[in-house]
Amino acid sequence: MKALIVGCGRVGAGLADHLARAGHDVTILDTSTRAFERLPADFAGKAIRGNGIDEDVLRRAGLAGADLFVALTEGDNRNVLMAQLARETFAIPRVIAKVNDPVRAEAYASLGLATLCRTTILEDAILDYLGEPVAGARGVQPPTGHDHPLEPHPASTPPVPTTGTRPGPAAPTGEA
Image (cartoon, rainbow, N blue to C red; front, side, top):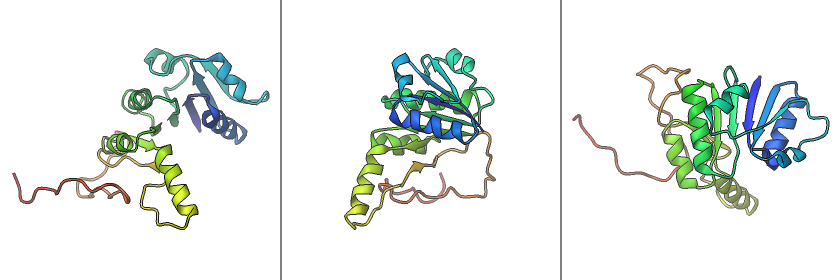
């Protein structure tokens, strides 16, 4: 698998190292050279300094032809912008955007982006530890609103509802 990760924080560095040790072709991108100090000295992937919201930087980093793109910066908007570029411009089959705001995570998932909301994950982990019921989406919330351009679904297949989401307005009845 060819993977590009943007954001060499603790999660990005750990994920990049794990995937590289498993034999995958991994590139990690960050705006700060110091961020790469989180990678082990024997990191088998590539570390590139650059801004992931720049389409040319993503292209030079090897995003074209990648199998996986993960946006793990601290900015929700940056992560979503990069995820949209990866999905729509580069047609990457697996794209994940880390989003801190649960409302945004749900909204972006309904727009067709897989999201990972650490706020929801932490809340669910604490509730689970306390023995309380957990209703939220666990882990990566898959896209719910739009089909991925590389994965067309027949029109007869209804979308799969996401469990644990907030109820929205009632759907209109009848035809327009």
